[in-house]
Length: 389
Image 1: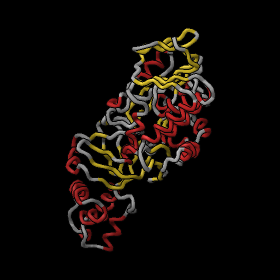
Image 2: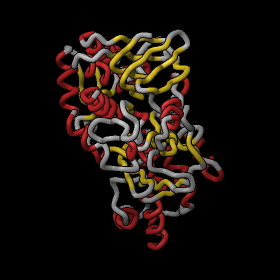
Image 3: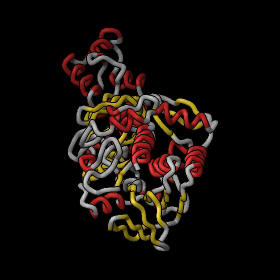
Image 4: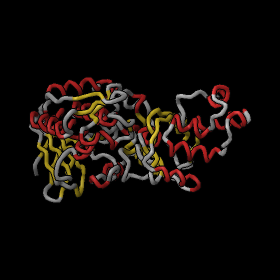
């Protein structure tokens, strides 16, 4: 049976980073990836250009049952550290918006870089290897459909169940439970929300987007919202979806650049205008029309009571939608929840009660915002474990 210092289950962002780090420290490392090629999620990210980090990534940009857990790893391997690696490989990059860094060329460059880093450490990467069983008796034994391997350390880096068409499963949680580790209930995150009931009429404007401020559970994001044939999407909605829970409303400030009493100001300055005409100046026509119809105030501002205008203005500043669900793991970019951070060392990602067992990346209950934050967690947690093996 081939023996290694460490076996890493999963050849994604976190697994490859961990393997490269440990390999370059002289450890004998094996990566087992069930897909036919490593880094499949990296390849599709950012429209194929890989939003590989966010220059402003910090603990405040992550969700976890323990909001302090990510601090140690993120502080010890920063976005600047990863950017230095990217530049060392001559990979051209650009900042898109809000600190999001992308390759100028292709996400393939990031995967090639990680594989080269693994090669420098003599890491063995085996693809098409599905794990059948894992056991521990002094050392870990991993049985795949073709062979058995043993190692003193085992790293769970198989991600979460988001995007199952890419081969994603809940394997990490099953394995964690096998070893007695607690799992925080996983749910889809960075995912479109669905609408039903009276709100179905917004499907009529599928494809229309507008800059808004979306809020769920007191957390707000100022980016675009997109109306879809199933409900709500776009960056602001994907962001708040991570904080949304079934039964909660999502509040949208549809006119974020207007003051709360803007309709009263407009009545003074443009008495012949209507709410519909003013909304058409601020928003796409189809969205303006549907909102005006819902508000139901059609007369000129001069002929509309201040009380009605104030109420309409307040509603536009906080228009509540009541999602009936999400589009699920199939459309979720990541997963909230996962292996409980209470089970792990924040410095090494090592299981506190199981010698030699580690968990990194999306498998852990640490979830970043949209915009490169989840990759930064993959790099940072991978380095933390790779340095500790």
